[in-house]
Image (cartoon, rainbow over all chains, first blue to last red; front, side):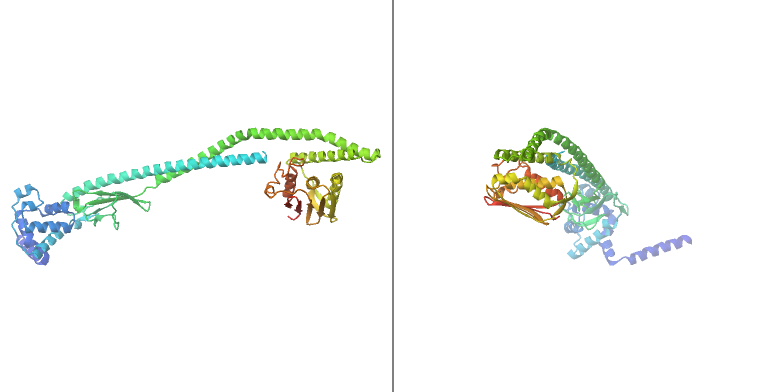
Length: 118
Length: 386
């Protein structure tokens, strides 16, 4: 009986958490993270790599949008080994506005400033 | 130490110490600046080292998957990271506008070091490290410089003093010898002059003989010698002479000195006008007053023209003596009061008369004024006011 109650509470929490997710987070989850999670792509590592090369969110956004519009090896900044481990990205065919918004949400989600503390 | 000796020593010390001070100040300033830069550079090197440390830690943070990334803080250093567009990302320095230089100082108190970060760990393209300038070592250096300057100042002052004394030693010896010579000469002259003057008076009194021209000339010459003797003695003993200040009947003394010089006045055919108020009294040493009067009267006789006018007036306010002699040139007026200075060499003398007058006038606080026109005459006035 106790086990059943526990599972019920956990399910309720998960459902409620999904329901409490804002529309932005939902969009990010749906457009990006779902696939990334399935393919086990390390989001944090990808973000940090972009950060170490482009420094500012504006420049990262430009670079990411440019890659997502044309997802090929030559437009990517990821090392060749990355593409051995993970499948090549398919073209999303999103509208520009949606694509830019997704990238912005992605950058905001992994923004390193939020983690930094004194 | 004589006045001239003191003056020479002071001048020498002034030039010597002044130039030494200038040279030392310049050398010390250069040395201080060099040392100060060295000390600041040491602190800048510490900033560079700190920047390297922080960069290593930024690298670690960049690769960390911890939910919280602790920014490296190492007091007394402060630091901040900036992106490629020089926008502030994070750190302990806020509100600072980044400059182009890698090393700079603000307000003479804050040291900054700007370093580039590559790759851009945590997005940082620039790392600014700052530290408050440690002034302890600079203050210590300043104190050391002050002590060094003081030590050098005392050393060179002493050295200068001994060098100065060494340099003026020949001059001091010459002056000493000259003074000794004058002292000996005057001493040796005293007896024969007194003998001559006494015998002339005895001849007049007991010989009951009329003064012949020859005898008068001997009398004048002897009185001149006597006066020179008195002047030299006065100058020689001036510093060691104890003055006996008393209330003097100046009117009487002026008349007395006029009588003393009467034979000289007669010999030159001068017309003497005495305009003396009776009962003029002054608190003075008698010898000072006599030297003052004798020198002024004898000058007025000596430099007067033959058969000229000699006007002596005395009131409670002033003593004035005017002649119709050769006068003094305007350019000579400035130095006429200095010892051994003579405006005209046509007459005998040593140039000490007006020096004595000036000394007496200065020591009693009288006011001396000389008006003169070449070939018209000279008027000397002494006002008793203090």
